[in-house]
Length: 219
Length: 183
Image (tube, rainbow over all chains, first blue to last red; front, side, top):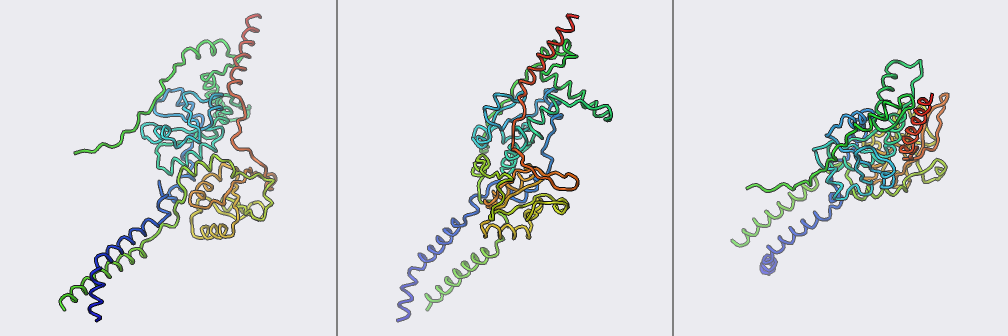
């Protein structure tokens, strides 16, 4: 009697085994948190986010622009309105809300150019940087202090007082020269500055990132 | 009889397989902190601006102040009833417990540092690993005669119109030029 019952159950044994496997596979789907786990680990992100290495100073940036360094892209993460009002030379506007659009990602996720993010201060630029860093985009920097700092140091540099060290004076003259490059005119140097610098300023060809090609299969 | 022996082998094998799967599931080490928000949602949160709290709104029993500066600065002076979670130590054991406790009690954590910039890293990381009960207290801390001075600090204000400034400077220099040529 028992044997017969056992045999009956056993005739389904493969189906039962298959069912067990299917249930196990379904269990994988129910592991919810891993679905959203994209990018580098939180620990890595934290150690990247607290390091001040990402900042670039306004002086460095001014130097890069004046030298017409072709290796970087300036990206403005403010909205279009403020971008139209004022933007740094050769900047590209990617408002923060469009940061992860496909078109923007083409600019952001590549390793040909260094990318320098800026906003009015560096608050929004930092946020953009952290989002990009989680997605493991490479070579991103943030302009420290943003446009406000740009104004305070490059466009309208503060004159050092007499008791300051020589370095401060050197820095001031460097910044003053830079501000003249960006169009500011000083009354005491009106003649040479206005007439020469503006004309010799060459426009750099805006670099455009080619669309990233998907890796093509070999043989 | 032969049939039975065969099935026994089969059932032993299947039991072993199931055991193996179970054991491997149990042994699998989960990472302590995982994201539970994707980048898109994080971006939406960042844009929304509803995570800023001003100094005048902090008198709420559901708020817990969190000082993100290091311990030395915290000991030197901090806001009343603030706890200290130094950002680089955010993911260690003690702080994780603290965070979990706050989340359980439905408290909102208000992060502050010497300026709002210092809180960004901690805020964004906490948001992405699932602590949505986090906000930023937009204050600036400085010291005056060894006393902590806290005041509201605006976020991302455009202070000056740079184009206007440049135009003005050009105008001024032209004026100066005219003056000198007249003389």
